[in-house]
Length: 82
Image (cartoon, rainbow, N blue to C red):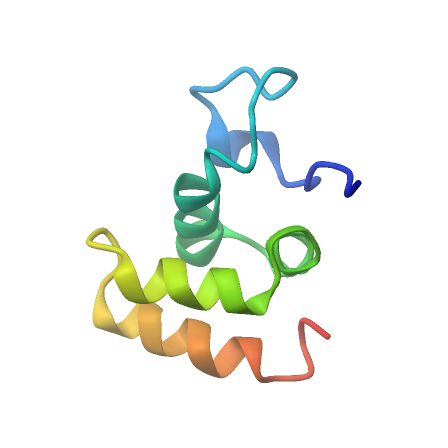
């Protein structure tokens, strides 16, 4: 079983991170990291959710703009998160 992603607490400030079900909250977590995450946050969501799930969340998101969706696709294929 994978350990929960270790992302910065302020990205999910309104949640009690000790009780969060990261699987159920995947859309919120991925959108927040795409919008405001640093390199370590990105690495953690890739480790936890995998690239395919991040892609599908980004594409289906009504919150993310086209620029963030395009960036996500390019960034996931880069060497930065691998």
